[in-house]
Length: 471
Image (cartoon, rainbow, N blue to C red; front, top):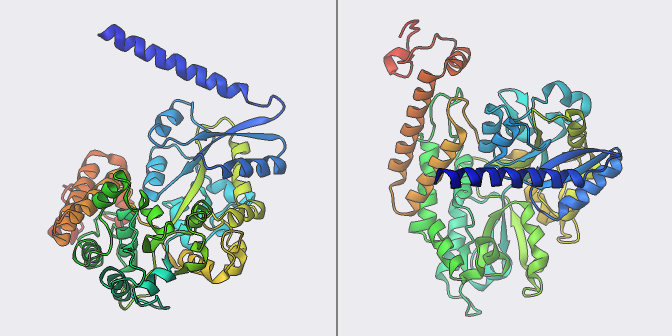
């Protein structure tokens, strides 16, 4: 058996060597090649073409992004030069692992500093005050709704300044009022439950962590209120399918086989989504020729007593800290900060462009897909006023992400929201304390953050209230 296993390893190594060799054969010997790890969106081909016209001495090879292998590849010197990084959980993980180059010494001089994009996004492209990436696009969720479906059910139309109660009232009308057309419609096309909770959390002023990152904030009232609202929308008001229900419907081919498809097939009244959702519209027009005219958008509902606010997110590119071509890779970030690149994002509808100057108003974002400025404006407003999700340097971000997702799914399955979040908060706090006990570099960070000497009982109330220098 061990010889079979060894043979498999050797075969895998040979296949990898062949793959690397294949990559090298498409390099241009007269230009410097950089590897861009990203998704397989066909728009990347045009984006590469424009870059190579701006920097004719450089050639870009696009490879499919695989976040499960990127740390190992970069650590062994086989990683790409430019790395697309998704949410803040993945971002902080790659920074802590030493995968991403610190761009701070170069960003201002080379034109891709944080002030070249949305001010609200700074916390998503910097980590502990240092910049490690620059946006490929920017997205904050708004509400897209189908006016025809709301009218069909005599449901109230969204109005400026609306609250979560207003949204629920409209969605309940879709669920409860018989339609004039005789068709049934789902009120809210839920395509990602954890994002619904995340936006509810920020809407209510909640956070994942305390300001110093030493405690989970999931047991605090803003988070609890957010999870209660999520539970009510899914189970009490029954205006959106749970993750399990959505998966079941999709596997059976029901409701258009996917949460996003439900909306664009005119089977759902509402969807929470970024501007990137409009990229899908052309594919649905043949079956739904009235779709564009029936669609409208508005900012997300607000929590009572608070202005509207949601999470601002980005797909952003960083540079492999072990890249052999760092200067050439930084030219790619210069390109991302250029008006030429942002103009491509405006045209294809892939969220908002990195440059706010090209998204000053809804009129700036009109394109062949949607030519109504009032449709695009809510996405700009959401990005300007949103904030990124927060992470803590004292606990592994991917673990926290998984635990929060599990908490959301447990609530969808009937768990008490308060109990579930308090349990999750306790797990996060225990992990923080464990990490601090084991890792001297985190103890030094603790002392820098708190101004107190570290000791293992720092978290106990009687200890936190005093300056104790010994365990």
